[in-house]
Amino acid sequence: MTQTIGPGQSKAAIPVPEKVVVSLIVNGVARELQLAPWTTLLDALRDHLDLTGTKKGCDHGQCGACTVLVDGRRINSCLTLAIMKDGAKVTTIEGLATNGALHALQQAFMDHDAFQCGYCTPGQICSAAGLMAEGKAKTADEIRELMSGNICRCGAYPNIVAAIQQAMEQS
Amino acid sequence: MIDFQYARANDVADAVRLIAADPGAKLIAGGTNLIDLMKEDVERPTRLIDITRLPLNSVEETADGGWRIGALVPNSDLAYHPLIAARYPMLASAILAGASAQLRNMASTGGNLLQRTRCYYFYDTATPCNKREPGSGCSAIAGLNRMHAILGTSEACIATHPSDMCVALAALDAKVHVTGPAEERAIAFSEFHRLPGDTPQRDTNLQPDEIVTAVELPARGFAENYTYLKIRDRLSYAFALISVAAALELEGDAIKEARLALGGVAHKPWRDPAAEAALRGQSANQSTFARAADLLLRDAKGFEHNAFKVDLAHRAIVRALTQAAAGTPQSQSDKKIR
Image 1: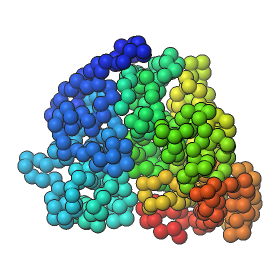
Image 2: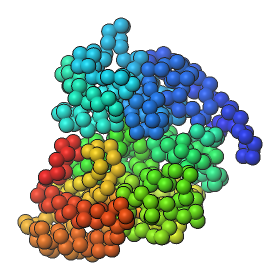
Image 3: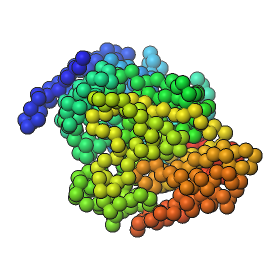
Image 4: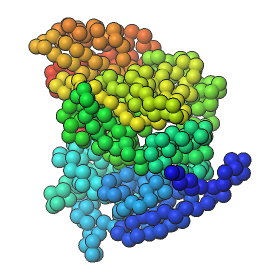
């Protein structure tokens, strides 16, 4: 059985962006969206759910600013089609704090001044949350290597590593 | 991004039927390369067939003691799979040398094989490129070719295959299982990717109506004496200038079996039976390793900006074989090359 969703069959005609229903659980809240198939998860979050904490940097998977957690795993939301994640649980920077208390990583980034301009920070923190859940990084070298998908053009890396180490020690 | 239709395949037969019915369609799994190329207007599929819900997500032992990896197993899950890490650590190391943690969480086993070159001109639709637009010419041969091939090039294309994982799979003599409308077949890894010749638009010998279902590893995993050494312009999250997958089976000081594959140097992972034959039966020392490197690179030819890769490859091969023989594989987090 095949489900076909999309614009009309004629390839000559300019396709009409026929929208489809995509269900996501975003930061614990069930959301139903009407999206064109080519809408990335990043654009769905920012433009359709007004969750603008997740940043669009390069939009090509090279900078990590768009990092979110999907079903607990960190991914680049700019290279993910929202329609392909129908039914998934998505956690963004807006969903990390619980009951008004900052996530340990958010507090640690402030404690260590782990940013300058702050544009990469939501992606850094979501990526670090994924890193902690994976449990593969123990040393500073391992943190650096497994955080290499998040670029900080201000060069706050030493403080980012220190912040992640603090959060790892607390958890 | 371009407009396209979207279909979700429910089983392998469904995916094959959908891909066979529409020459403009593309399969999508992790999407890390395809969506990027669609944003760049390099790939223009009229329909995407989402295969992420197919049951191809397991790692299972085969009857002869090897392992069969489902095409949808994410790169990170494969690298961290306890049995793969224990039995095939060279494969795990190669996977962890590539991309970023986020991309490895997304990228599939099958998709890693099918990713396309990162040649700048392939990506730049304002320039000629025989791979993107057959017959238009190659901009890299007389252009910026620092990251390009030094082996197996043609007058039509000097692009490299970008994968790290595939270099280890080539060295391990993996097989690629594919399913088409008429049959299932297994393709030897060395026969899966192609040299550019005069058809650089074809990266692999996969037919347009076939789907990769699994990668099979033979029982021999070289878990004692191996390395994956990757040389690149920054320490992490960059494509290889040169990478070496080296695996040995030793009896005392004597090399019983050897595997040697290079990445970043050709349109496919580069192996040469003569180089491996030159290692077998010899004692594991620097002159043996240098002879193997000479043989593996005997036809190497650099271009204006990448001629340095020939020497770099030679030294990387000798170093990798030294690491493998010593049982001290390259760490993918401590970047010091010892």
